[in-house]
Length: 267
Image (cartoon, rainbow, N blue to C red; front, side, top):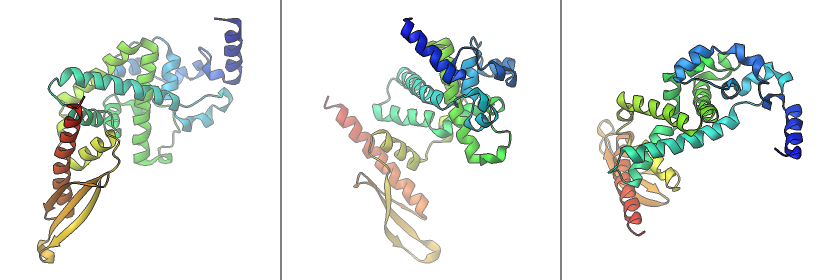
């Protein structure tokens, strides 16, 4: 390392003590390392990576003198690693699936709901360094916190053991989730699937519009049309709005997947 870079590094260590190797050691005692390693099924080499991954912004008020950062930057790295590994996993596991189908599968396996599922599978919440008063976040807030922390934990494993270590960790959880029927539990929600595919293809949020209501109040029938990028892609009929929207979304999904497949054939 050049003298300039070394001086710059030392200067940053003075400004941000938590970035220096071992400077997070005062927080080591806050974590049960044996239990964390067991939960992750991973042998930790450098504890600082994992302290940083578990450090929620609500805890910073208790360690102001350490000038630390929260785990949010780790979330950024973990998200990228997760998407790469899941894409690779699906590509190698579903050899006959089209690009559109793989996109939907990946969305289901990396969305907020999935991250919460993975985090709870390893009981990640018990290791987090955050405000001890759980009311500060609420139930939905807690789900966001553990989902973000899960991505940060992936980043910690990636930095500590490299891409292969992160891949092993992620694929182990993916395999477990799939074996337990995680994907099946979210099947047949055509509205969610259409939303995921539409956003993944950069087409925005689908819009639903009631085009017809028929029958007496006790036996109504609804016809609903769904638009993607202002193009009508499907229409559905049902005894209630939810049922009609699901039917419309199912029809739109078939068309959207067909468009994606046809576009691939042009290249």
